[in-house]
Image (cartoon, rainbow, N blue to C red; front, side, top):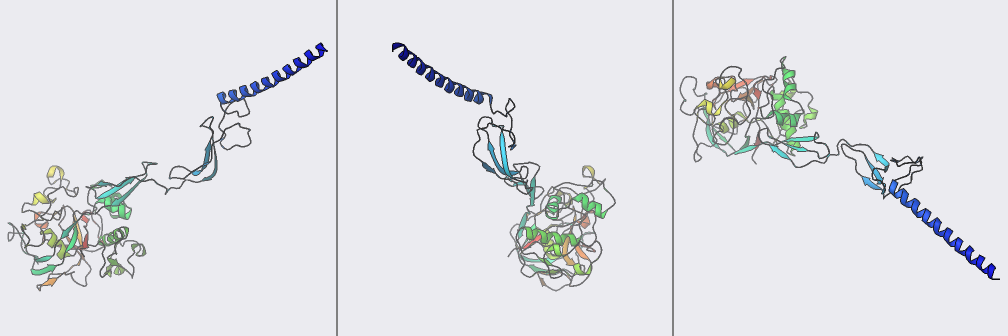
Amino acid sequence: MKTTQRTTVLGAVDLHSMARMRIIIVLLTVIALAMTGCDDGNGGGGNDNGDNNTAHVHDWGNWETTARTCTTAGGEIRTCKLDPTHTETRNEVAIDPTAHDYGNWTENQSAGVETRICSYDNTHTEIRPKIAMVLVGGGTFQLGKQLGSLAGQTGYADVTPVSNVTLTSFYMGKYEVTQAQWQAVMGTTIEELQAAASTSTANRTWGDAYPVYYVNWYHAIMFCNKLSIMEGLTPAYRISNSTNPDDWGTVPTSSNSTWNAVEVVSDSTGYRLPTEAQWEYAAKGGDPTAAGWVGYTFAGSDTVGDVAWYSGNSGDNGGTANIRTHEVGTKAPNGLGIYDMSGNVLEWCWDRYGNYTSEDKTDPTGPSSGSGRRMRSGGYKISAGGVTSTYRDSYDPHNRVNDYGFRLARPAN
């Protein structure tokens, strides 16, 4: 009897020992797996990448949704807790080239634009124009009257007949429209404008802060409406019963009767070309009865070189060789703080070509018929007598030359 009891006790002890050994083996296996990473069934760890045909041993986290961006696809992803380089994806959606994360707008004041950059890819940028405008208070002045110390001298006569003109308040562009502003609105570069208008591919003056040129009158009115629409303003111009430039077709390169019949939309708030009277009034500094007003021959001075890029200084080293346009706002402004109203580029106005009339006028818009359109400022190619505040020029509206540009106006009310 004693021998039998001893055998039973020893058997129980052996069973308990075996159970403990099994537990230890399991624990050691788990620890080994945790220390060596995920088992891919081939003796080592590996990235599953959604390949469910291989028996991976992962400890997956929860599924997380990732939004698609302009550089990466979206969908759902989960990550292995044992090795974060092991991931699994599902429900993938393709890259969205429009899904940007733009930062704040940054202004380039000299070019008249603002830019913002995508945080996902700094080559993804967005540009919009920022048009600086100056309020020109209403008043009465003498249209065609030469002013300043040069008035009456040879080449500086009145443009007759002089008349009294009363204008209501309006806004005038502080600068000529720049190449950066043109590209932001129209989507074309100065190189493309030049190639379309000229056989020359030489870099005349390409740069964001230079005035746009090779622009005809038709281009300018299209720009005005496009910019107005971008800014939520009522477009000023209507062609064939539409104010949407997308309906107008390609900008004409020869005289076009449909475009010549353009109308100004009554009570519109959008950008437009200044009338010839508005242009001259602003160039002369506005209301002559205002405190501190001085009547100058050129737009802001009786000394042409202070305020104008013209044939006598627009070339190399301020001379006459290789004359060309210059960055806007690099000469002194006039009394209203408006730049380059004498010289740099010729500026398209709204008015048709026609002689002045002598009667008093209020907010005149020029002749009701005629093919040519007025231009002001003289530009960089002309002598000092052609960059006065009274000098007039006119060209066919389809013409586009390397000194044809424009500036903008807007109603004040």
